[in-house]
Image (cartoon, rainbow over all chains, first blue to last red; front, side):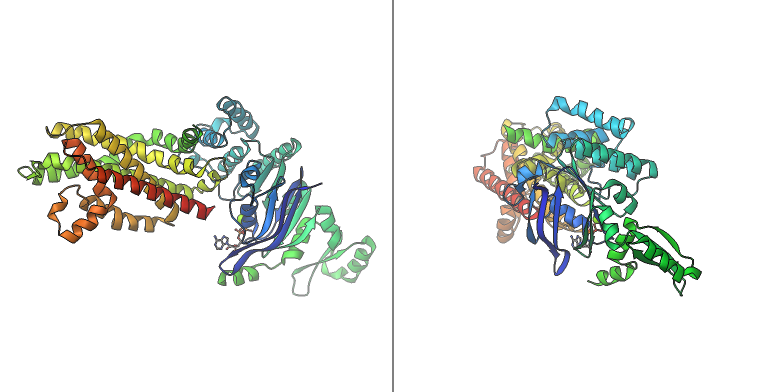
Length: 292
Length: 247
Ligand SMILES: Nc1ncnc2c1ncn2[C@@H]1O[C@H](COP(=O)(O)OP(=O)(O)OP(=O)(O)O)[C@@H](O)[C@H]1O
Ligand SMILES: [Mg+2]
């Protein structure tokens, strides 16, 4: 099956710093694709490239079978995006923002209102429709941004850290909404820091660090790759250490070796994979990066 | 037709903004020109005549010119700058199926509307202050044209200028001097030859010349009108160029 998002060899340089350094992104139609990475890994930059908001320094990209270099218009019509920085006009009301966005996408006038009401009902935005966007809390602003992105019924929805700053209820509601959209046939590309979220939501995930993709696959596959059983124990300096095993009996054998260091055996989570791939101590990385 | 339709789609959010804030926006843009009229027209220029008319009659078209020009430029430039840098809503507009020309025109609508309202209000005030002044269709047309030209410059500035301090710098070193010097409140003949030629070539000088001739029924400076249109095309090109670069 052809990929609905098909990017090859994407490089984005700012000066001589490569924020994205030669990545391939292949997303199949109908999946929820998780893009995971620590701060500054290049997630937002990748989203900007995939949504055609930024031209990559190198690489080629097609969206829905349309090359973005040759037929950007056709590719763009398939895309809905909710950026990390909520891109709304804050000095007009929620309803006005949504109507403006719908008009820009040339949705027929008489369809705007019913669709707006349907979506607002689904997200629980109805009571806020006539409030100024600037006066809403961060979570509600994000919901408005999501509603705006959904107005033209995009085939592919990009969400750049949609749950950052949302309370637990809203996060769960948003996940449900994403699943619901996905069931209706929307392919979802979502970036996040939250591993539990990615694990429960995404069919496929990629882990990106320092502009390069470290791992790709279903959450289960990734866990199996490092070993589906985790043994945690205390090191001599008192730090928590982790060892991964494919086999339960190997894990138990190891537990008996470190029995006096408070060991515990559990299933490997996506979070473990993430930390193994991106380094448990990523502050060092950040420091180096800031100097660039 | 889709050009006009699309232009209005782009302008929509700005129109909602205008509707919400009309009195405040009007009040802030009208204060300075009214002060000019009172201070210079009444205070200083009561007994002066200039180029054959009373100073008040001479000055009012100039003040109308500077009102429309500064208000269209600053409104558009600041709004676009905020949408681009702070709201970051502009980039998403680029994803919508809208042509670049509609985008540029749409973004200038707010400036054209607001500054036309301010300009007409000033004209009305001026009409009661001086008997020599006439409101002619040509005058209105010239006002609309200059609003369009400077709104376009505002779009270009909003696209190009990266931050608020630099925008203020541009305002203080380009726009503000133009409002004082470009034949708005005194005749360019008063200046030394070199200065007269340089300042006379600036777009606001063309606007003042056109508005004044139209309002006082002098010989119409068609050359100025053409130069003004030329500036409009130049600014439009600048907008297109900067849009291409960001996209
Ligand atoms: N316009 C720019 N100019 C220069 N450097 C940039 C620019 N945009 C991003 N970068 C750099 O590129 C790197 C990747 O940034 P990006 O925003 O893609 O990270 P991210 O993975 O989205 O991080 P976060 O999780 O914090 O949102 C960072 O080091 C950032 O400083
Ligand atoms: Mg980001």
